[in-house]
Amino acid sequence: MKRFLGIDPGLAILLDKAPGEELDYGFVMECLKAYRNPRVKLNHLLKIGALIRIKKGIYIFGKNFARRPFSSEVLANMIYGPSYVSLEWACQYYRLIPERVTTVTSITTQRSKRFQTPLGLFTYDHLSIQVFSIGVTLIKFSDQQQALIATKEKALTDLLVLRRGAFSSKKHFKETLFEDLRIEEEDISKLDLDLLKAIYLAKPHSAINYLIQYRNNE
Image: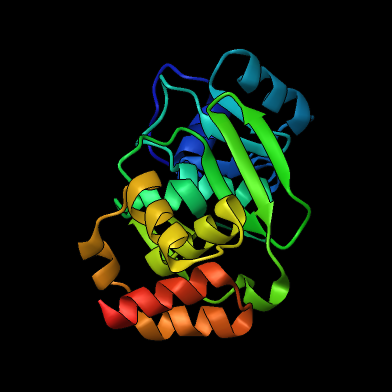
């Protein structure tokens, strides 16, 4: 074990064994199993700020002990699942939208939920199982951090379908896309047309249909 001089021995074990900054209860208990009461030790680490509880059973290292930045995307996958990061947060990640997003937004097959945490708000919107896994990829944020996140095609279609609803005309669609969301036409031209069609076949929706038409004819 690496030497972490001058810090709590239990914390030293966690710092040595944790592959990433994001920890779950089972991992923490396994690391602290040599203690007579691992839960008491965990509560002590929380009390002194060595660990921060994000949600029951999910933790990160405190700011004075973190070895690297935590990943909001990894935490989003851990907090509620099955889920993948999408909607506004993923569109921001791909730089499709200009706004700064502070809520970490995800899609789930479970009921829609919201979690207010010490790191901010994490939200989860429901999507049916038949379209859930299409257009989802595993992105590596570091050697120790990876998370399920929508592709840019899936993130945009999720945003249009769940946040804007049905479209009555192509004019209405283009106004939403370019004036409301302020997406660049160049970004639309780079979308994977085959993936958009696969998403549409799984769950037909006017927003995806208009997006395919525009991408196909631009």
